[in-house]
Image: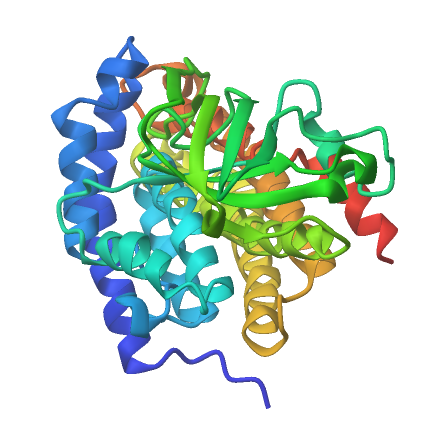
Length: 399
């Protein structure tokens, strides 16, 4: 029998995340959203202090192996935390999600590379000041979504890795959509080693910030302004040959899809948290705003919208929980299921944040309220980490 009752430990984690989201993340996100210069925003006390507090509580290392300093949370426990954090705002949690990819990837797949784990994963997990932030770079301007076209030999990363003695030399650039790209000090880089094999000729490399690595300016975006995104350029960056985490070959699609599987689930929980924030604000307003002699909550046109938003939150969470359960019980999870959950949740987030704006009428588009921000943030969730159209096509291919 399926049990939806959380454990006492899960409840405590959820409670801690809820308090942090509402007291720390939300005011920081609202302040960052209003900052006109993105580069200044990511250097601001609002951004840096929020990250520091998140690191102090361990939110940056939730799913990393315990033996390497992480919390080792299972996917369902982490899910409860991600949703609660996203109620405060989606940009800061997205920063933490993206920052966890490189150390988590290294922790799982580089068990035999003890020196890399000691040098990069352990310090990241021990960090309580948010001094270490990582990013992963796959997307490039010339490839974009074609990076999942595993069987076309003409498609390959322009970023290249050439062997010179006991080193690899990384050259090229990743697109402006690299999450944490302008602030990270460690990069998980997908680079072409053998162009004759197409995208399967890519290797995965761990590249620390240093000579030959240049971070571009921060992207000025419509929404999710608390998530840094920026270009990363490599101009002859030299790394030891041991920094190749995965060699090119037929396993490339498997690893790439595994990251997508986990990433889709994370984006889905951001969407659920965002829907909750919009729903809660609109519901409170609707119970207080009186028109035609009664609170507008009692008018069917408003009540229907609110109940449909409630349905959407519960339905999206249920599908995501199944995807998380599958990830916990099946090696590398199920990409088809995680894609379905992510597309479902993010499309609903876009629909219902718009509906919650409508409930507030003219106030909904005013920056005196948060609804217009939630609507802008929701749009980006349909696009980040591969568009919903691309994830739908990938899901269709696995039916």
